[in-house]
Length: 364
Image (tube, rainbow, N blue to C red; front, side):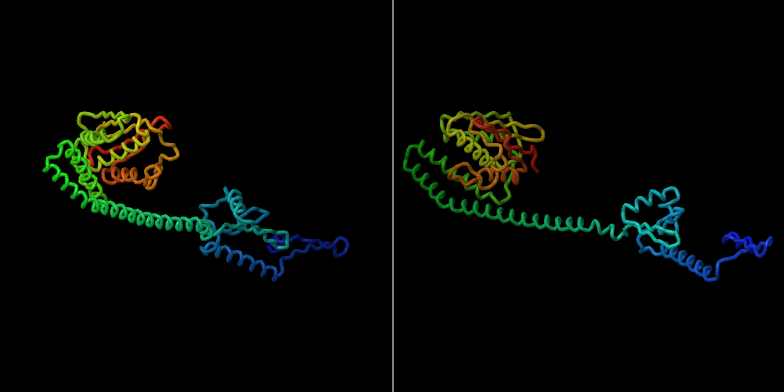
């Protein structure tokens, strides 16, 4: 039996002791070699056990270069199998440079390894960090914008109420003077026109007093509101401006007549200024089941396309002495009080512009 076992372990050799007499020698490894091999096997086993049981290690794959067999790995057996070893080796090789282990006896093993789960997660950390910083920046900007807008609103409301307060005293005096003139028998036509202007001043004061306060919206015929303000404007603009108004029979929507008159008057006055006192001003009121529209079209100079977005911003004005507050107030009244929109529907240089006011048919 020993000869069979040793013959398989190592090559035999034959010695001719004397002519015609040969002796074959069978031998086994020395005890030191057997001991070293046992220690080697123990280390490999311990290595494999440690790979499998230690979850904190990076994914590794130790392969025998000669047989291409897996010596040890901590990768799940469901992830890697005999059929996809080559494919998995390519993936690991693409991640990191493999380590070659040379045992100085012609035997080499290659250790392939992947990045740890922690390292993979750290790859996304800069993106997460930038995202968090951007989020905080956005929140800070929104907070700043909210406070700035609130401050602007307070300034607007304060200026408007102070203006209304300052107009109150001379207006009361004017009312008294008109009544005095009427009592003295002055020409009724004169006092009637003066009374119209006094009433107009009262309307302006009422408008300013409403800025910053909750406006009362009532179900009214929008056509009637527009016709009233147009009737007021006709005798106060140039005779060379042809004013026409087209309205549906009844266009009801919830609105504040005083503020809506302010809006229409402001846009119409801007249109007259754009026409330099000569041209056509067409006003149309129409609607459907969802929206009601007021279109104000002029034959003026038109608005350059690059300025269409800026005209509703505070401070924008094409007039030398203009404050740039009119269209800003128009947008505020329509958007904040009436939940509608005001836009430039169409504008062509030297042909004119069309402003559209859009109001919901039912504003709750």
